[in-house]
Image 1 (tube, rainbow, N blue to C red):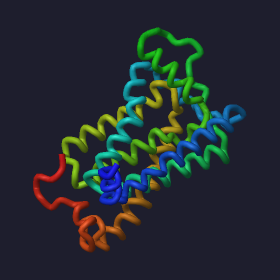
Image 2: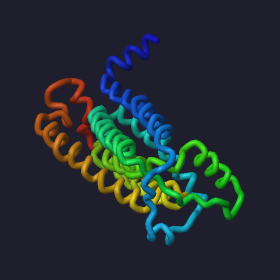
Image 3: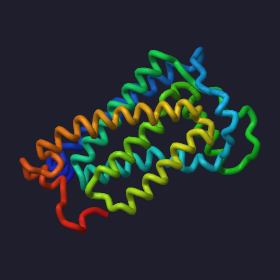
Image 4: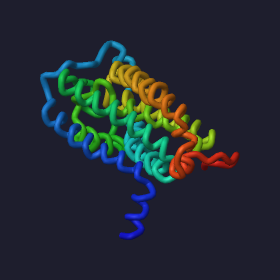
Length: 235
């Protein structure tokens, strides 16, 4: 218990992670409220996107990877964790609010699966846990943009991990269409709104904090620890 208290004391930025249970409350509330009588987001473009159950693997890796990335930043890169959580908080909250004000959903899930295998079984469980409403903009895509932005702005991650992470998160974004969890415009809206939030967090807020020395640790021992000036920093 003493070690936990000491860890929290030396990593106060981790309190930003408390946004996640708040988001989950909002998410499940909207999921319960918006179930039908929604604006259907599918368009003619979606007719050309095939169904592929195997992409349920990258699709379901999304939450795990976002969590792992968050833990890494908590331990290794406090300033990146703050910006990562600010991005998620702004993006997820506004997306959830939009879904509440403008009920939306998609009707792309096949009534009968063309095959039966372990991936279709996982996909059926995924569909059962997550209804087909509240899809615009795609929170999955917003999480992808949040992760990619955080990785490329972190001095603690080597280029190879940034590249590999970007490729995998791009596959996750594509998987939202291939397992029929989202329509094309859900994905497009996710990237568009993610771009706006990126400007808010990394260009506007981030630039101001960088000028004040909060990235490179100019004004406190804790902030100095946020940045490793050695050429071998990172993993």
